[in-house]
Amino acid sequence: MLEKPGVPIIARALKHTRRVAILDGDGAHTYGELLEAAEQVAFRLLGERDDLREARVAFCVPPGFSYSAVQWGIWLAGGIAVPLFPGHPLPEIEYELEDTAAASVIAHGDLEAKLRPAAARSRVALLSAGDLHRIGLPGARYLPKIEPERRAQILYTSGTTSRPKGVVTTHRNITAQITSLTAAWEWQEDDRILHALPLHHTHGIINALGCALWSGAACEMLPGFDAGQAWERFAQGRVTLFMAVPTMYVRLIAAWRNASPEKKSLLSRACRRMRLMVSGSAALPVEVFNEWQRITGHRLLERYGMTEIGMALSNPLRGDRRPGHVGEPLPGVTVRLVGEDGLPVQAEGEPGEIEVRGDNVFLEYWQRPEATRAAFHDGWFRTGDVALLERGYYRILGRSSVDIIKTGGYKVSALEVEEVLRTHPGIRECAVVGVEDPEWGERVAAAVVLDRGSSLSLEELRDWAKERLAGYKVPSRLACLDELPRNVLGKVTKPELKKRFAGEAGQG
Image (cartoon, rainbow, N blue to C red):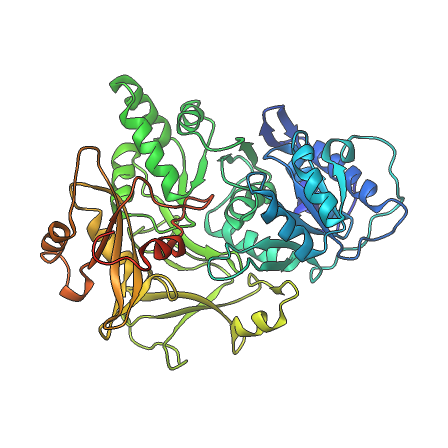
């Protein structure tokens, strides 16, 4: 077995070889088994070479033991891990293979057949995950030395304004992101997290899986999110942590409401035994925060981060968790707000763009030096998100390019308008965007999903909203939809909504 691997998270696993690391559909797997499997992956990837020297190795593996064995094996061999999402269509997978110039792609089980055409068109070697981590004689004698500054991973942004960019993080970046969270959220080796998040985003890779394996904790991995299945796991009483996106909590609440009174009581008691429940990747509606607290006794811990920085802000583990706020800077992370003049915001309550500095911040956008330069301001990463400070806690107003609407000389936070619209008795879900307008610059446009049997006209909405919002914040466009367009993390894809409103007049 490995003696002194240069990758910090793998080195730490040597202290926990007999503890359970991952539970999946095939059972429980120890840290010792994970180390052995990762070593086999590394040796087979190396072949006769002594170091992959940052060759990009893509992998498409479902959640479970094999995912971590492949990820760790790529790192041990000196490669850059490029996780692919199994649910993506082939054109998106091909784009990532070609953009990274991947040396090979590792696929698991049935996914081999799906990826074979993409691998062939991109001229990338297709390898079987099962064959790679099967225990046997190594194909190399030594593993390369891995320095902290070596590139470790490329994750792709959502690409809402352009083609997705590859975000490159080093082993130092990943270590900083994980240690910041394990300290702030007090991870322990006796923890057990229920993991139902996608494994091609920071939320699933770093916050849930990475923190668990760094701490010697157990990670129970589900193939995907199912509210009923998650509740059953909670009821078993072994899970201590859960992390999800707001949409997941909405579905959990709906499943709880459909349960019998006896089952509701059992499920609520089970959640109260857990120590931490976290929400992220999208703004948590205050009504969801309040309803979850009523059902489970948990005040959800909301935090703020993105692919380029990991996590930057968090409500405290011990202390006041304010709904609608994302807390304070995490350990090792420096945050500031900057106004349109490029100068730091001085007054509390004054909005500004969030800028972040620290070892958690990514190295570069893959093969995009101009985009990398544009993303930084005097060494600070420019997030593009606008926030303000309220009594020491940050409150996100929205993304400057999507959620800050400039109408008639005013700036309107789409998130603020959404919070108000959610209190309408007939609205189940909503999203607000700015639509270009020659007179106003932009108009406030609302897309809503109504409760069954409800109806709503633009005039009715405006009359209701005028009693609760300043006139310039009241929507002047309305679209009633069956559902809101969302990405895999449940975040509303607002550029899609903008397209729906474009060219329409009045009520959509």
